[in-house]
Structures are given as structure tokens and as C-alpha cells.
Length: 445
Image (cartoon, rainbow, N blue to C red; front, side, top):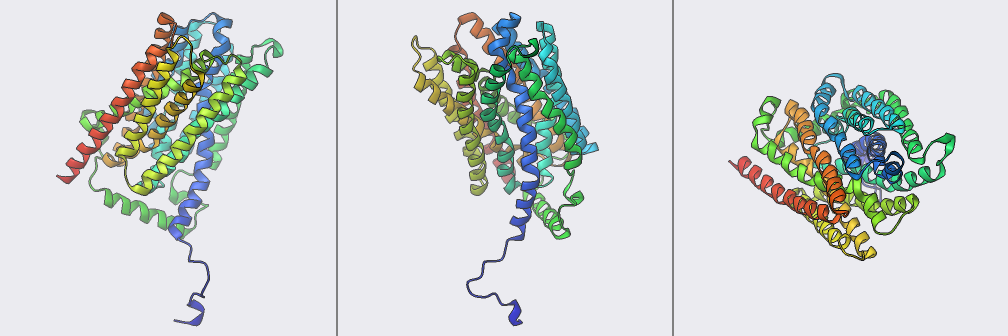
């Protein structure tokens, strides 16, 4: 060995080329995808803040709001699988461009709603356009990351929904307060317009910024492309035989078990997403600005939980208890919140702490969940399977808000609905434990 090749004492250790490559990929992909998810989340859930004004202005009932909030997920359900199949055919950047521009335009159009029918139609179309973005990104990231790096990547991307909550509450409060009466329009109308425009612009930018596959990435060197290919091939071999024919999905008990797990979790997540502003208002905070800031702080804990739980799951190589433990924490928070909201005099500190726990626990389980389909599916089955699982499970997003609206209209309280949702979230943890145990037995055989 020549002297120039001998490392000097005290010099820094050699940089890990695999780690450096994936750091470069993460910095390229995840911030932009996260921004898109923030925009999607804002345009999806700003209805919860608009509700504080628009129900009185338009004379809509709580049940009308609940149905309108939830009908989004019917459009989501119908178009999600076709969207993921199209992504495999035409690539991610064209798919993301179409989706993002579409949901932005529909969000803007909501500003001119005057009847329940118009409200329902536009919420359905918003879901139809956004369908495919979330499962499309999940599929897209599997093109780049091996399984041992995915939970962290998923958690980083998905934490954008929590970041949207952190930003969305104060932003919605500020917009609705500062624009009230501007050009003769209500603050809730300006909320839809101002939050829809960035999505349209981001969709145009996505086509030029995104790269469909690692081998097409001009921003990776030849060595870095080779590292990614080797990592993915080694991961594919290590995973063993998995289903690759999407036509077998509809008859697979394990796929339907996964759908049930995610459905139960999303019952809790959707309830929190669309009813947190109402819960905060009933706790005694009436101004949109106050509601927005409190919701923002709660979502900050949710964002931290998603990233930390996903990272810890990767490091430990463990999925079952990272998911189930988070879901059980969320259910416990939901139960305490239900008890507090059912009291004649609501203990505000207890209610807010329980709300934060429910949100953080529920959201922390989501990125870990998406490791489960990767244990079962590959190839074309993964593309269709992720969309199938997400689309069917997201029907919870239709049912849970609508049911909460009916319960609120009938009883005048949100507490009975929260009790029900807490029980359903416990069921998601139980089913997840059963799924992992069953899959492990199957692989052992």
C-alpha cells in the first residue's frame, strides 16, 4: 500500500456512500413532496375552520357539514386505484401535476358555494382529484428506498399533514379574520381562494422538478444510481416471495385485514381532523384565531410523533408494537377527551391535553402502518394494493365525520361520538397485532 493511501491518525472517518446517497435523495424528494402534502392537507381540511363561519352564513346544519366533509372520501375511494395504475403507466410527475392542479381549482371553487348540493358536489370532486396523491407517493417512495429506510421516509413525508395542522390553524384564523368583508366576501370564502392558488402553481412546478425513477435522475451520479439499484435489489431478495399479481388482491384475507386495520385508525384520524376546531370552540375558545393557534400546537406534537416513531421503528426493525402502541395511546386520549367533553363544566386543561394525546398517538401510527403492505406485496400488486388499502380504508373519512355530525345534531354534544371512535381505534391495534402474527406464521411455513 502506498503512503498516500494510508489514512492519517486523527482524520475523519470515510463517508458512508450509501448513507450519503440516501441523504441526497431525501433532501431532493421529501421536502418537495412534503410541501405538496401540506397543500393537499390544507385544501382538504380547511373546511373544518370555514365551518365556524359558513354554517351560519349559508344556514347549513351540523349534519350537512358532516356529510359534506365526509363525501370527499367517496370521490377518493372511486378514483384512487385507477390513479395509482395510471401512475405506473405515465410516471409520477405527470400524475402529481394533474392531481395537484385539479384539487387547487376545486378548492378555489368552494368559495362560491351557496347550497348543500353545490357543497356536496365540490367536496366529492375535491376527493376525486386528490385521489391517488397519498398512495401514489407511498408507491413512488418504494421506487427509491429499501424497506429498512422506508418508515423514516414515510414518517418524514406524512408528518407534513401534522405540519399543515400546525400552520393551517393559525393561517386559517388569520385569513378569516383579516379578509372578512374584503370585496364584499366572507372570510371563509377568502380562505378557500387563498389556500387553493398555491396548489395550482405547485402542480405546474412538479412536472419540471420531479424525477420518475432513480435511473432517470440527472442529479445522481452513476455510482449513486448503482448504489440505489443494489440496495433495492438486495431488499427485494431479502423480502422473499411476495404477491405480485394485483388480480389476487381482492380475494386475499390478509389484504382485507390490512384494510380493516387502517379503516379503524382512520376513523379516529378523520374525526380529529374535521372536528378538532369544534372541540376547541366547545371548550370555550370562540375566535377563529384562538382556535387556529390551539389546533396548531396540537398538530406540532402530531408531527413530532410521526417522525420519531417512524425513525425508531426503522432502527429497531419492529412494526407491530410501534403501530399498536401508538394507536392505543391515541385511543386513550380520545377516551379521556370524550369524558371531559361530556361533563357539564368542561375541564379545559384536561380536554386540551387529551386532545393532544389523541392526535399525537393516532398520527404516529400512520407511517408505521405502511410498512405492513410491503411485507405482503410487490410489483404490480404493490401499486394497486396500496391504492386499494388506502381507498377502501378512507371510507372511514366519509363515515366518521358524517356520524359525528348526526350525533352532534341529535344530542348537542360531541362526547358520544368520541366514545365510539375510541373503541374503534383500540380495535385497529388489536387487528394489527393479529395481522403481523399471522403473516409471520405464514412466512415461517
